[in-house]
Amino acid sequence: ISDYITRTETPVGNTTLTDKGNFTLEVDIEKTQQLTLHFQNLRGVVFAEPGHQHRVEFPTRDSLRQVNPDMVYDIELSVYSKDSMEMNLLAIDYNTRFDTFWKKNYQKFLYKGSVHVLDSFHDVMRKHYKYVTNPYFMPWMDFSIASLEDGTFHPDKKLANAYLIGKPIYYDNVE
Image 1 (tube, rainbow, N blue to C red):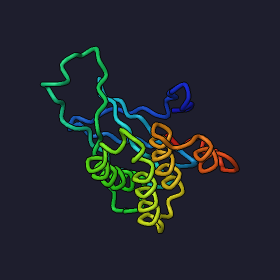
Image 2 (cartoon, rainbow, N blue to C red; image 1 turned 90 degrees about the vertical axis):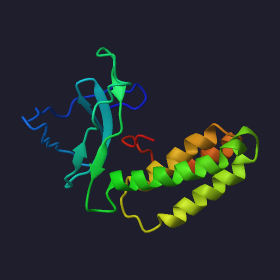
Image 3 (cartoon, rainbow, N blue to C red; image 1 turned 120 degrees about the horizontal axis):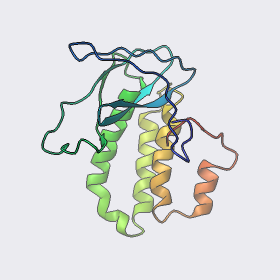
Image 4 (cartoon, helix red, strand yellow; image 1 turned 120 degrees about the vertical axis):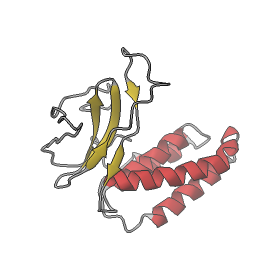
């Protein structure tokens, strides 16, 4: 995505499948970016990092749900890496932790009880990931939580001070 406000996609590469359904795609990038991979009417996202190789698998077509050939279906790609600090694996780990948090606390988001619960979760996640050296991850995590804070009872001034005023702008970070 070349512009996250308009959601404009700019192609960075194309490839073809082998007879066995495999593909190789090399992309020359200078910094971590989220790429959208399209295959037939399936669409999934993966984080590409300079100097890294990623093994990506599209899931088997769900013939019961993906029935309309004219519709594009968003799917979850499987991403494999040996590097635990690789952005895809960090995102999977964080999303798993967030899902557990959400299942336990979603009812608190119906009233002001969400402010302290979300702040505590954010503090716990920052401590848990304090040794992560991937420069894309921490802003990605922080802004994913900020989008939740924006939809809850967090004051706008607090959000502006925490995430915007005097802070760098992460133009290439999806969150």
